[in-house]
Image (cartoon, rainbow, N blue to C red; front, side, top):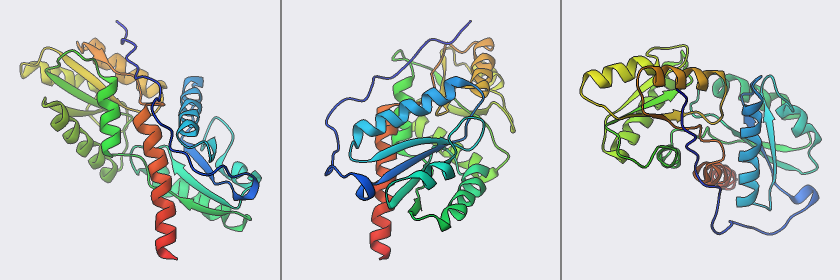
Length: 259
C-alpha cells in the first residue's frame, strides 16, 4: 500500500514585493538544506527556493546543501555579487546541523567581502503547523502521527513534541510523535498504540521539508501498521515560503535594532 499524493496548492495571492535592486545592493538569501543522495530532496529544495522568489522577487534566492548535493553554502556566499546575505537553515529543529554545521559556515565566511546573517531554523512555528494541516486529507481523522526524521538531541526532540501538541490543538484530535531514525518510536508503533486506544482513521503528518529515505521509511512503517494516509513533506507549501521570508525580515530587523 502506498501513500496517497496529498499535496498542497502552489503559492498564490499577492506578492510581497520591495524595490527592485540589482548588483551589490540586492539582498542575497541563501537557503541551506541538509542534502541527500535522493534527487527528490534537491528538487523539493529548488521548488521552495522558487516559491520564496515568488514571494520576494527583489531578493537573490539561492538553494545550497551541507552534504551530498551541491552547491555548498560557502561556495555560493563567496561568489555573490552583493554585499549582504541572510543564510536561512531549512531545518525544522535546531539539532546538530543547526547548532554546529551552520555556525561553522558563518565562521568560515567571516573573511568574505559580504556581510552574512544567520536566520533561525524554521520549526516549530505556527506557519509550519498550518502547512502540516494543509497536507493532511480533508476527511475527518481520529488521530494523527507526527512523523519526523529523528535526532539524538533531546532539545530538538522537545521542539517536535511542541509541534505535535500544537497540531493536536489545531485539529482537536490526539497527535503523537514518531521518528524514522535515531530515537523511538517508529511511526508504525505509534499507529499500533493509537489503534489500541480506539482510533480507526489515523493519518500521518510529515515533519519533513523534503522526501528521501527517512521519509519513505516513516511512510512505509505507518501504512503497514494501518494508517489511512501519509501526507507528503512540506516542500514548497505557501506557508513555508512565507515563513522563510519572515525569518529573513526578522533577521534584518534584528540587525537594525542592534545598530
